Image 1 (cartoon, helix red, strand yellow):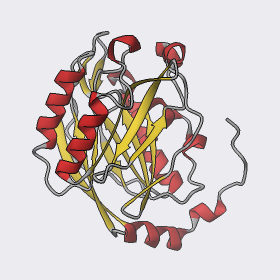
Image 2 (cartoon, rainbow, N blue to C red):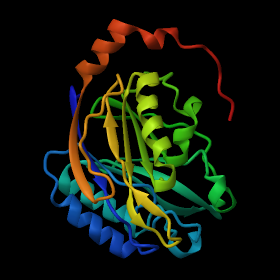
Image 3 (cartoon, rainbow, N blue to C red):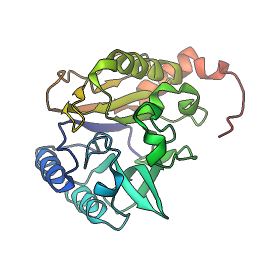
Length: 259
């Protein structure tokens, strides 16, 4: 168990529907990182946010998963991001959390983005995932999930809420506001990693990746609209101090969520 967790946020551009080029780009960036416990990549980091699932889909035994396991072991750091996975005649926007010892945890995006027709291509997940890494309870979610606070509701007393995204510039004010809100209402660290650049549909992404503490204070200084890598260190003491002092989570309403 670790009282601190150092997280590397990789805000990067993505080559449209080109897993090989994206793996090479990301590997170069990861090679420059030292001292991270966890490395966070954007949503659909091998392809960009594409509805052409047949062009980029891989399996859980595919090249990217194998590559992630090797990279994680080499850097002695967990790596998380989402990619297109084909399984049982369905396609999933699947977040994968790969640990240096080979442990692999997955989460299928619950809220598919209907505005882009994601629900017509990808099968939505039904299970919320809370994973334990180095004694830190982490809730990993994907992009559009950010708009739905009930799904992220901290009934498990998790420590870190984590979003990977392809969130376009035109709605970036919502991204900034909601990341901060999720940290405050859940009394947890909240980290969001978004891409930059243009995609194959000519949508622009301005990044705004960020890390927030349990009071909603910004912890990073990642520039907007530029590729960047930044490390932030999270402290368990920060969480326990303010949860015990303020007690907000004890006053949350009790109800059951039905999928």
